[in-house]
Amino acid sequence: MKHLLGAHVFVSGGVDSAIDGGESLGFTAIQLFTKNNNRWFSKDLTEKEINAFKEKKSKSGIKAIVSHDSYLINLCAKDPENLEKSRKSFLDELKRCELLEIPYLNFHPGSHGGQGEEEGLKIIAESLNIAHEQTKGYKVKSMLEATAGQGNALGYRFEQLKKIIDMVDEKERMCVCIDTAHIFAAGYNIKDPKEYKKVIKEFDDVIGLDLLNCIHMNDSKKELGSRVDRHDHIGKGFIGKEGFTNIMNDKKLEKVPKILETPKGKEQKEDLENIKTLLSLVKK
Ligand SMILES: [Zn+2]
Ligand SMILES: [Zn+2]
Image (tube, rainbow, N blue to C red; front, side, top):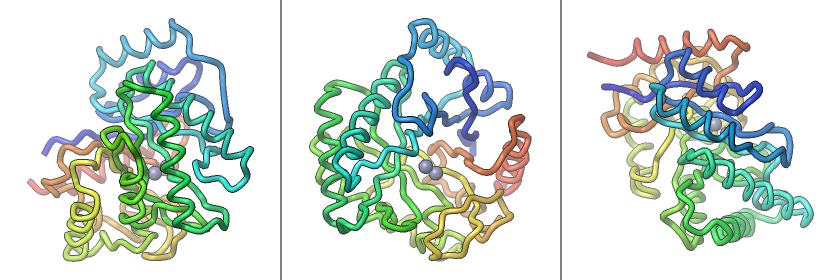
């Protein structure tokens, strides 16, 4: 099996530095922030930056790129001002992806802040409809990330992701990302081979595997069903090598880009180590 494999990469200076980073580490899939992830807004991308990004990408071995949105964005924020800001910022994120020809904007559905789960899901879909309405004809897809369900975070059941998609008008603009640490903490047992098969079947039945366009490959520092989101190195957490063996040998997931979001230093040596571990699990 030939996997599209890599990690979240750093941007230092121009956004094109993400391509340099990914390429130098031999990644075939990368994730990046197109702006500071702890800010609502940042400077517009310059023509020069956009061209450099596209040119470097076309010459690189990187075949899959995902953008992760700012951590501040909450598409079902209870506070109206916060919601407004989130919607504007999300729109900006979509625009940046479109300019850079990044096909996926990954985001956490949102945290309902006590408004209730059903209400939260409705507001998220409304936010997406507003964003899509203002970006007619865009190619970038809005990629819902499955969450651990910490606090009031939504998206910890496949059914919740499906409900959001069902309420979005332009369904062809939606897709999904599974984060292994998140779904494990949310109670999906991907460690046990038998249970793993059931989880993937459930995803296929509820959402459809054709909508799964990325997997965040993270081991979990917390137990199954803990609803706590803490990433660990591959094989060092509660999912363990067993769980990642299931994924790395699943023909159904062969073409889905797999991206690490595990702890790392500037040099990203830990990523290379984790990738080595993942590849060692592939059965010949
Ligand atoms: Zn995320
Ligand atoms: Zn993730």
